[in-house]
Amino acid sequence: MTDTSSATTSADDRPAPGVAGSSSTAAAAVADAAAAASSAARPTAAGRDLTVAVIGAGGRMGAEAVRAVEATPGLRLVGRYGSADELGDLGGADVAVELTVPAASPGNVAHCVERGVHVVVGTTGWDEARLSTLREQLAAAPPAATGAGVGVLIAPNFAVGALLMMAFAAKAAPFFESVEVVELHHPAKVDAPSGTAARTAAMIAASRAEAGTPVPPDATTSDPDGARGVSVDGIHVHSVRLRGLTAHQEVLLGNAGEQLTLRHDSFDRTSFMPGVIAAVRAVADHPGLTVGLEHYLGLD
Picture 1 (cartoon, rainbow, N blue to C red):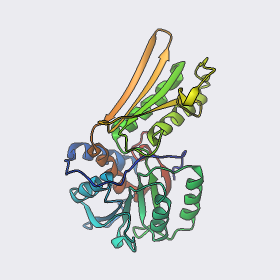
Picture 2: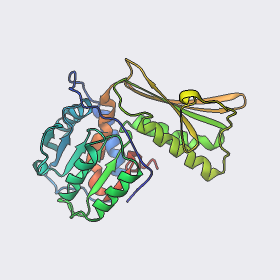
Picture 3: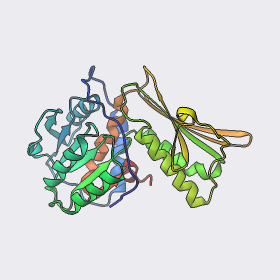
Picture 4: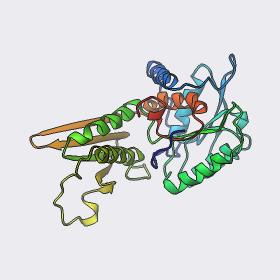
């Protein structure tokens, strides 16, 4: 079991504007990485598709996940649920993909866990208190229908580029005196800072602490209305909400006379789908709670 710090990410609950394609090459690469990082057997017997339910199918991320599951060989969609739908037995799903809102997510995940259904979660609001409750629920859960214990993945971000950017930032952070994070998203995003930015800052802070790197210098004595952003474990995080954006993040690292900028851009929600599919395929191989898809891909 891999259990790390708290996590948040967004999945708004609005109708999808249209059908967008997905990258089968990227999906295959991410899925291969997840498979290589897992030492357990496949969760279903040979010849049987892995059955999947999508909770939050009426939102943009949820609708994209429905399309991705339906387009992926070896996966079979058995349920799609909107905010007003009763989950019931989830259509007999092996795995549920939970993409809703913070108020609903813990109850949805608990419903799945109590029924032995693995869960891939991409919803905001999973602070340490909620994670602690989820650990208790997993400890009391029945065996999964696929065998062994129930697995739950809470993923701040599903885009492989974002995961790599986070890993690169944590690796580079001890070598620079200063570091700050800037996240930029569409104006309908409900949380700030984003879960990805908060997790990136936490990873950076942990890496610097392990290396004995001092806190970044900052002579600011006045910070009206959060002009310096929010501090996550001593790392400043800044949030931008702008029409026309989807999901973007920069990590700025500075020394005297030099600067390193790491940036990731998701221009469309299809960029998250290879990670979603990889998580669906791998979650049964990881009983218990995992925070961060990077642990499935061998990036930790």
